[in-house]
Image (cartoon, rainbow, N blue to C red):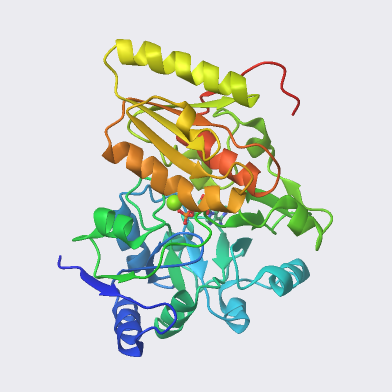
Length: 354
Ligand code: AMP
Ligand code: MG
């Protein structure tokens, strides 16, 4: 398949290009598009065939449901059984934005889109290109992240081209994603709201609107054994080709530990990599040292993380050490993604208070 790669200026999107992309979705095709979280791989959410095509293009298991993207509040009613008051409250504060809400689905949403579930995940993104595209596409775009299954979510058009060229009809190639982590997912189908996937919208932020929000116990377990409620969370996403170990502790001990490991790995002929903060990056002697950003700037680290994991793959590194990120909120979402990428391989040094 020939993939049209359309450069798009986010401050002035070409209406002809947007309407062409929308037309592709309406006629059953697939288009990758930028959003503020990561790039999405879109198809018509109300068409089972389109959703099946998305799974095929990604190589994604079809029990892993898709998020339905809308571009205005009034579109919500058609795809859910009823809009819970709590959804209005959260939407008021966080939509458009990086928050996905799970609600009971209406009959209009095919099971192919929801992975066989009676619930549907909905998000109203803030990215202007995404909004224009969703409107042109008819209002309902099902989209997972636009990466091949098993690769990090793409935060830049170049990674979408890398994974999807030849597999889909069109790529809207805009700017890099400003957030860089997938949306926060909150389940509104139970008695109280539950966070199924942490993200840029943090527990504290959600609780400022709904004090009874809690976190899925499977996320808190931080292991691979407790089954998560968001089906997608059970897959080991974002796994780099090399072995990734996260190292947590006081800064000097972390540097010492990683340095010792680098020496040992190098003596075994391994190609080594380190993902470190701006403050510590120059302390390491590895084949590849990547700067994740200022240790206290979690937004910057979130924006860079998935790109760094891809760079490590491109560099064909055998063993990778990443400094842990400490703190709450976005830092917790970053650690969630890092832990998944590392298959929960973390070394905690010394006497850490958590
Ligand atoms: P992605 O689009 O790649 O960010 O992945 C979508 C995530 O949303 C996956 O982790 C899914 O398991 C989750 N998800 C989508 N729909 C539902 C749903 N109805 N119930 C629970 N989780 C969902
Ligand atoms: Mg994904």
